[in-house]
Image 1 (cartoon, rainbow, N blue to C red):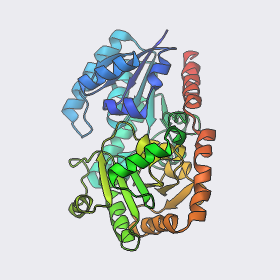
Image 2: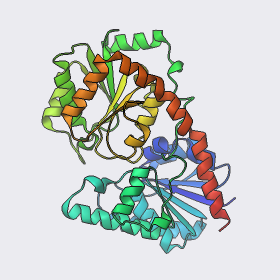
Image 3: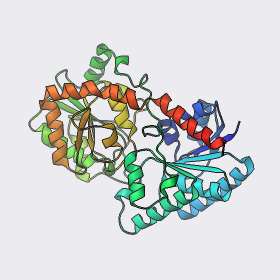
Amino acid sequence: MKKLVRITTVPISLEKLLENQLNFMSKYYHVTAMSAEKERLKMFGENQDIKTFHLELTRKITPLQDLKAVYKLYKFLKEIKPHIVHTHTPKAGIVGMLAAYIARVPHRLHTVAGLPLMEATGIKRKVLNAVEKLTYVCATKVYPNSKGLKDFILTENLSKPSKLKIIGNGSSNGIDTTYFDPNRYTETFKNELKLKLGISKTDKVFIFVGRLVSDKGINELISAFNKLQQNHQNIKLLLVGSLESDLDPLHKQTLNTIKSNQHIISLGFQKDVRPWFAISDMLTFPSYREGFPNVVLQASAMGLPCIVSNINGCNEIITDNLNGLIIPKKDPDALEDAMKVLVENPILYIKLKENTRKFIQEKYERKVFWKALLYEYKSLDKQ
């Protein structure tokens, strides 16, 4: 079998973004996973039954450390001579593609699942633009995981059109709808979990899943929920995700509201998000930028109508007034209005809910995506 190297900046991307994909590919290639956080990476390799190689990667701009990682990776690639190097996330992309280019790896693939430069300005934007361009120059193929991302890359002239391709219908991994299935949870289980959290049977439950940072629209979400609550006391908001205060912190007022408002329940990072989807009525996802958000796929598969920002990825999974509602980004008033509509209009809510799961099953089933990616790899074998 030929050798395949997959690289992400941190192991959680291997665990969540590419869940079980590398184990599937190991039936067809000798797979090595690379990432930071040595012990967690080692555990991932043992769990997936694949080899691992530790790289010191950071999510910040750290040129000296990044050059050391490039050199270490170059030496490793020269030694093992892989057929394919496939990277995900911006830092892993530049380090992995540069090292693979210097090592003359024949097939250098990079998946774009979101671009931080979309929200950057000034010198930072110029630096990120240059890094992204260099990544694509070094790659032989670039896979935007949504049509919106592909269009953005072309508009910004970051890559030649001939290098770009979307795998399947988009996404980086598809979704396992047998795993994300609301029928796995009984009414008894849901009622007991609600009781533990102080959620009554008449409460309408909104949920957000993701990192609690400004770029995810959390400031707008908390503001909108607070206003809506003034006239609707029977609502709750679940926040499922870790607070990241170093890279993109929330406003102080937002943090205070999360702590003081008893209708907001912050659950922190949860390894399994399905129980929380199961006790919720709708997803609120007012993010500023995404590639192809797994959270929206997951919530939809669990039968939740989704309120999402009008950004790439989100507006490809959600069709306004069909399986969710689409709002302008960074607009707390529009978000409040959409939340209000779903609380006050049960006929529309039921209509949206009926369309959520079947749409995901038809377009984004995980094994279909895996086979599409494997077909892409095998087409490279002939070159």
